[in-house]
Picture 1: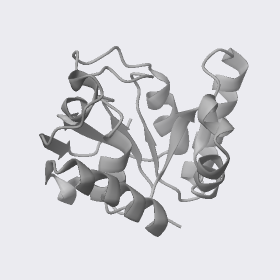
Picture 2: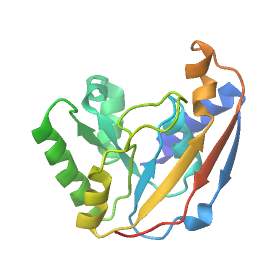
Picture 3: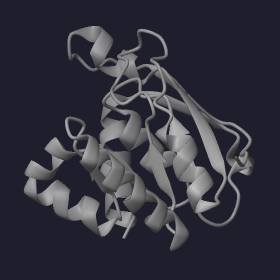
Picture 4: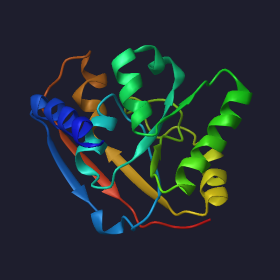
Length: 173
């Protein structure tokens, strides 16, 4: 299930001619985890698909569901779609995420809720703590630095840049 997205992501990253340094892979435990990461730019998801060896789905804004091929692929990967304008939908998304984690699927979420475009870390929404606690699984924090330099900070031009992905030690709540 993950091979096609990994090939797609890796191909996109190669075209940027950027370099990626990944540290902390030893911090990823076995079993399902909730990955949480800052959300710097459009290249975060391809970078994480390429460099995180554990299969995962992710939480995405519901607008992505309008893109037929991508929506089908994301559904197959156990991604969860979130309508940020509807509190009831957000609650249902939390429950669906807990369910996916309890059945053994790892999930990635960006608690900032949107890309910060390299303008500093945004405020984290607290829902990720409840998700991990209710599912009884560890949280694995990830820090991404540099993906916004690939596109967002360059008027959508794509220069080669250096990206750092740091996987921090997991913890339980």
